[in-house]
Image (cartoon, rainbow over all chains, first blue to last red; front, side, top):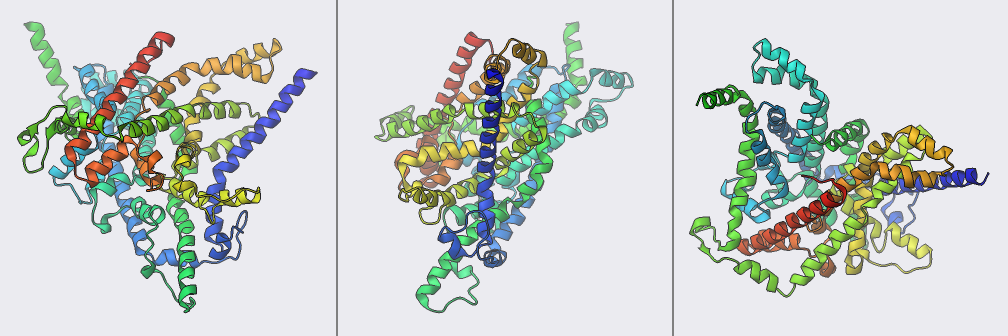
Length: 300
Length: 303
């Protein structure tokens, strides 16, 4: 009798705790969304907790007129799209080549690929190298940098080794099919799931990165979204002169406080606007992420 | 002699495979290996005008300068503290996975899991902004809660004492769900008979977790732990830079952000390269030591 009770109590406490965790995961973003639709003054007073107070679209009207964000959006889309293609073109053929057991000097080449995972030249030598190559403040630098993630390459290599039966290649060998043809005709079609996985890994990484843009770009026209966000959200650099002030109080003091409230509430909206693409795609792509973790966990 | 020509023939026959590997290999040569070669500026008085070879060799001058720098201990201490703290929350995703594994209702389990990795898809900039919004002294929800409970509002972001907690727990918030995936997968392959046998022997659920589930996923835990401990000094500058401000600097200035400040913003190329190199070498050393210990103790290792 007693044993059953212990298990039941455990089950109930466990679910309660998990629900609390789920709430903590969701609430910050939920709060930002309701705050962005609420009267800025109510939010500052701390009256917004679980539902919108004093519905208004002021914040979004301001955001839509704030050019920097949309330029950043455009740049991020370009960098992410082209950059991910560049990643795939480098990663997948190499992973295929390295998965072949017949490859001579395979061990040596593998080591060559593994060393950068453990040791790097560091921030400054890399920075100087990029500068020396004339890549400073060029938009395409954002595409070139981060070209190969060794981790992603290992995952892909493991997939090629474990999921495509050797007999398929043997048959092709007998037919006199060349290595490149085998790669394109046999391996690539079968590798679609892993290509989706690492394309997503790369794309999410690129979309969310800000650091390289911060050190290698100078021209604001080239800034990706995350760097624009950093300047607005972290460094609080909303340009008051860019705000739409129609309909605001003309009394100078009130006017300034109003501007501050608007700037504050814009932050909520911006966090939401910036996260929307990821929030839309993540329920659809999360299963691929899970798959990637599983493939990666098998030592190949 | 003959075998040599045969080997050569085999090598030449594989040229297409090498062609497939070539682009990535060249990329690494330019963007990874060349900077490694360039790391020697840490031992030279580098100036852009003279180039690497034209700059005077000064040996360990800059490494020494860093070790003798009055704030050396502070930087190393901050870096280590953040690293060790990050390592200390390593069990969070393991515990979360074990808890989730106990949920019998499949729909609920799937929903909680899906919610749990939503934060992983948010960018570091967004996560840090959320942190600032929530800890804001005037409008932050956390402060509203503190006041409602009878406490006084405080400014977490500018308080050095709070920096570590904010840094580490926001990372747990972001990564826990995603990091748990691997353990959840490992738990799903625990043989049902084992659990059943334990139940027949009269073990309750907690006992089954302790004696069956945890031992089953231990190899996975060990591998992940080795990987995680390799990052003790590898605390990333990307997030720390975002949370750093003049008032919390005594806790938030770490080796890698110092490298950034001196090198990129201050233009002290050689000195900051030396500091970066120091950090990197210590890191590799720690990884190597942990791996060796693990191989001896549990026969699991990275290489």
